Image (cartoon, rainbow, N blue to C red; front, side, top):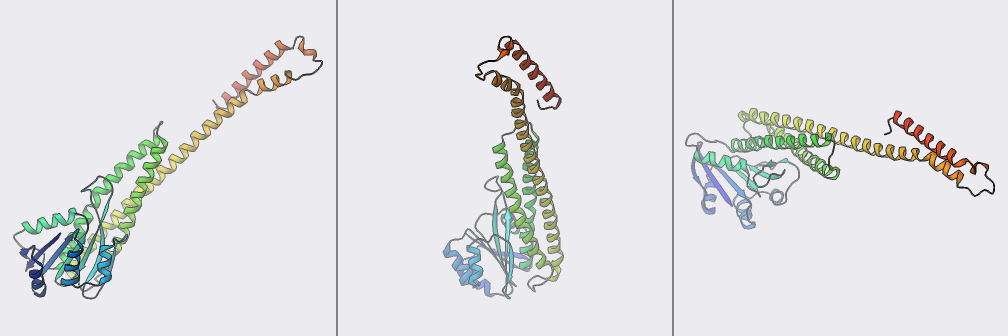
Length: 322
């Protein structure tokens, strides 16, 4: 689906233009054009990215083939920016969606394969605002990335809640070990994915905040620095949660090892208790021709066996093996 918004001096003057009209508007340097491609068809990709804007084939290929890490590339006339959004629009599971930007001097093209809450919210805001709107494509890009970063907060809260629940299960007396291991590995994978996205995304915003590109106006640099600081805080929070998860995993392993040792101690204690019975029974079970103690030996054997067993039990109890 193709959505387009045309701004003039910060005012929305048109939207959802036909391709021919979009080509004419694209040629007018006094207008600001924002085109959003949401799950586009191959025909729409070719019509917008190749025909109307004539982007580099490698950048178009990166849009079609998802990138695992955020990045920014300077093609002189425009910046190609890859970011990742985290939304819970479809499922309650952790999921990321790539959001690509083509940032030019008087246009912005966004590309994503799934509906994004940040893009939808900004579209609704742009359509409703009757006063001054964005006066540059860098302002639209900043607003979209800002909304995208804001959506990371509920994701962290969701992962924090899962972490606290796992910590309670780890410390519980009776817990399903296999299920708990699967949950630990699942949450650890979510934290790892989040950290691998946030850190390079912070580097991308840091590059924009330094003013390396002329496509980002100097007056917007403080806003991008604020975005970078937000991502730094998110990364630190995710890192602290990840450390808590590793501690919970270590506690679980130590607890499992302790329970295994307790089982081994109990089996060893049972074996130790049966030693007197085995030794005395084995001795009297031998087939000697003459055994003088056989005449009155059975009472003595039973007595020695009983006393030895009781003494062994008392000894093991004092050693706290029972």
